[in-house]
Length: 82
Image 1: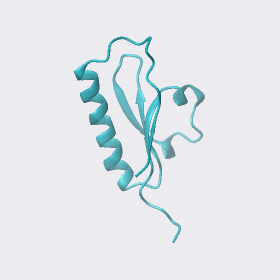
Image 2: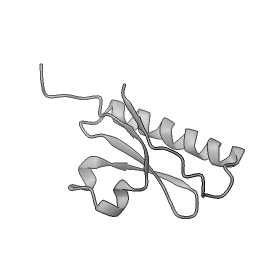
Image 3: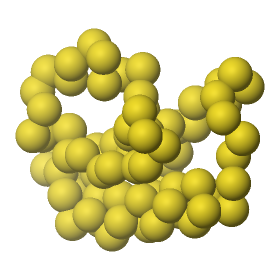
């Protein structure tokens, strides 16, 4: 399984344990979804500090403003190639 991590913005508010728990929960959700999907799963950080998971297949092509918010990408686990 491959991961893409974006560098942390040090001008952001302090990173708390609650932020970390929310991030881990979103990554876990993305891993579960990616295992059963052809599409990559992206974890995005919202302006309020929360995290959401989106399926790349639902947002084709990816909107430019979303690229800036991606903090982690889990590759889709299903492939048509043999």
